[in-house]
Length: 562
Image (cartoon, rainbow, N blue to C red; front, side):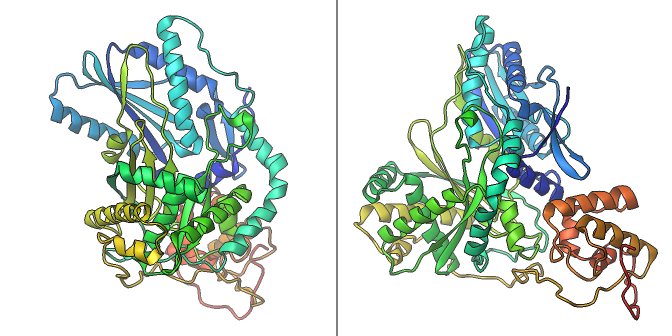
């Protein structure tokens, strides 16, 4: 029997992002392995079927009911592991063919209403040589899920080929239970955390990075990739520095990235987003799903400050972020109510994350080599940020810096220089006793031109959307104009609306905006998307966007929803 459950707060944010930019492949997560040995494809397919059957979130349909998204668990059929035989081609032809398939795999939007939200393809390169690629949507997946996938798929495959029952821990809860818990028990305490972030971030402006070209009014989200290995000596130095300063290696890597960003933007502070794991309860440890929440960290990077002081400040800021990390990011955005800008991510445009060593995939009788990063760089995955920096620890303890960047803004050479500058800064940080931030910045000799700003685009505007105050409402002038305003007012729960006022200044939220867009489509046949509402903001703006004419003023206002 199907039962509706709410989305978690994190899922709701991603669902809204999909409504804003449908099919954004920044939320397509890819994992891949080269498999050498006598693989049993049928056993692998059955193992993947068992994985989807074990975790309800993978077979849940995310659908709108009365305008609000819910999740509905579906029955689990056999998992579709698509097979592509490339055995008749040579090495370069095989690589090119895989790249083409990967682009299609990541470019094809996930239909969130049609589970499973997991795709798989098995490339056969030779009799005992395969490449397995799995792609999921972020709305059902996070970093901890990556670890669980490798652990559980290894055991499920072993059980299949050995003809036994898998030995996996019993799941005492499912993802829908977590979503219900958030809504029914945790939600009451979120107000204080949301207010904390509103106070912390209301007057904060993310520095504009020196781009290679002007920011377009509408982003294409095309991603480029840059990867550089962090020298082993620097990795050891970071570990020792973290021990001495009583912080984690993540704090060291983040603090130095803050210095790099502040120096590059020629600003005294860095504003960087980072994800928190969000798996505080033991019942969540063995669940696949999306539990992370984004937080915004602000680092004051004054040149005279010693590195030890910055490390202490970043540690304190992170502790505060963890304390208030339950506040859903999209609720914080709605509370602050920044100006809607389709050219950038709200509140921050630069993100940083540290990924500890991943658990390897162990398929019985088969050698599995991780190739996720290499395949990702050849796929068509996009980016929601101007810049996402990731320090990733490999299975053998090596560390690499991965940059995913917006090609709308930056050239490959700029990102290569930025990556090399980060490593130069790391080397300087671990070679000296307690250098000042100015000294660290001087060490980044490969840093691209500092403070090189281009003219702002038409999309750059004020940070806040101001409410309309007590000005008299401007009423609709045509029948369709009035019908749009009537739906607008009903969604906002108002008796009438000022047709020139911003939807968000009148109390609208992103979720209410998604409901409005759907109602305008189903009731009035208007083909608009959420991003169109963000751009036009008011009834008058939407009417103008739709090309329905700009009505002339009438002498007096009248109710919009009457």
